[in-house]
Length: 464
Image (cartoon, rainbow, N blue to C red):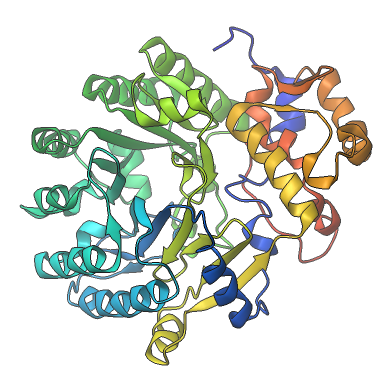
């Protein structure tokens, strides 16, 4: 991390909303009239040799507690039996998916998110794992990247051992902040001793990578309090740390109305919290993967960064670039390489589609040739902070700056502000520019540019 940090002028100009680029085009541009038949044809087309290996994101939306900050698709309930029917419906969805896929394609990556997958009762967990084992050609733990999200407050005895026996070796734990006043303000009381016990159990079982989620910008956070949280987390020495930014959007996420906006840190203070966190994490030996992800040397995420196999997907930075990403469960998003598709977010509509024998597609988008060029450029900027500028092979060797003449002009202010360097062979995001890389990538976002002035323009979270 460079000692130079953005000044007040840069913060005022660039600490503004921008897409997170977990995909390009971004999810707000997916179309509700995307033909289901076309989606199924594109799904089957991924079997064409050489067929990529498979990734699967499986969404389990249940939570026992409502966290006020959360913007995830979730179902808050104390009735665990509700998840039993959901798992049965997932089984039907997996049948519909795998009927369109060659059975020999290996499942090299699997992520269970939510909600919290550990909400499931033991029998439902066993049912789910059995379905996954029957539906896919799983691979050995040494060759796989299987991970699950977990709420340390909601992990029954035997749960971590059960998932470990299936092949899971990566565990992601929500923490957010350890300060009692911050926890009370976000309705997430979670003693640090509880989280430490879960980490110790996971390591004792043989999980090789533990991730801790933290959030910057929560009510009542300040440097002193957040440094104390960081010191405790660094003492735990998790292999990965995700340092997310809280986006206060109460119109979109009603639970956030319970948060007093007057208690939220201002943008400048939020930036200082982030800058201090980056400083402490890098001093402790963590590699800044990009944006909000950090990992210890030797972790798979660092190896992916070093080998050029790092990618952005709907979970943030991830390994196993080049797979076909399937999504199952309400709201889950799939990336076929040629198209994106998102499932129904409403539980009843999702279940009704499956009951009728249909994939529960709610919206999607097939990438056109321009989308594919721009996706590559945007993802290289987001994952490597640099992109080469040779002629575009995808566009018949058209010179890079001939194709992106408008974008070169739009980059000029970012170059003048020291966020970007344009060299003869590449565009490079500077150390300061990494704070605002979402704005650098946005220069190449033609769909966002065309929709920006429309009344229905997508709303994004602030960069800081």
